[in-house]
Image (tube, rainbow, N blue to C red; front, top):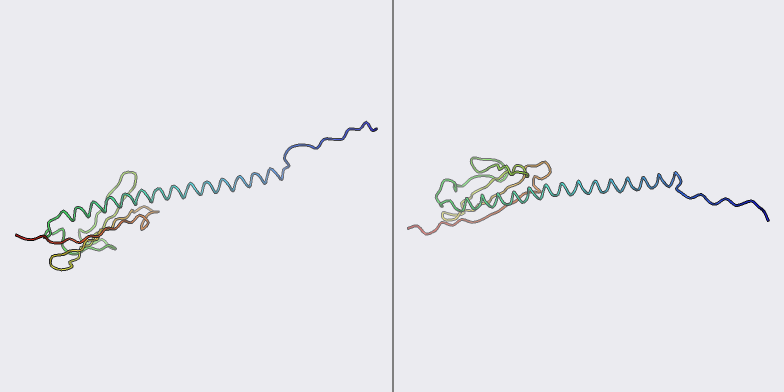
Length: 143
């Protein structure tokens, strides 16, 4: 019998295995970072959308509360450009600026069609945060 002992295989990682593990880890971290950025963007858009919905609803209620013959219900306005007094800006703490426009159209002598549109002015939101409400306003019986 030989007295030479066989060498035990060395345990541990090779340099190639360590590099492959680091590359896999890097790709995983990049994916998680991207996921966090998308989540933060979606959260900002959702906050502006909620604020736009609230402000558009409030503006519509204010217009509905005006007397039918009030100058504030005169036909006019545009949903795409600022015109006359048919728009407003609101600063919402923690959300940003919300821009609101409305348009009033006479359907006939006793009916008006009102459209209110609000949207966030954030760089990421814009039309993604848009809220739009419509209603018909009918003149009640005159005495």
